[in-house]
Length: 130
Image (tube, rainbow, N blue to C red):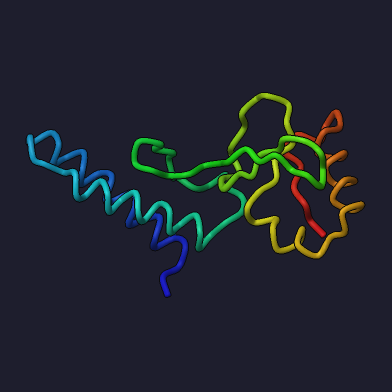
């Protein structure tokens, strides 16, 4: 299995190779699709803090960054984000894909408390840690 540093190095080299080929007027569509696949795989293999990740969002390439969900348990619209740097700036609570294993074991009451914390004054961007 590939480690995080190697995968991100491959992505970085791929970006550089694509830029060089584009400058030469070459068709790089297949390379770009492969690079987007690598970026998606990186997000799945290495979720969590994206601070040191150099993965860009390309909606045209089909990368899903977040989805807005109408939660019946919370009686509210929330975001489910697959990247830690997602911020729609709309004040809605954001739940992150890497939080799902921890959230799965929570009761509806616990989920509502987590939701309230995420909406609190310093809660936007808060991650579930326990």
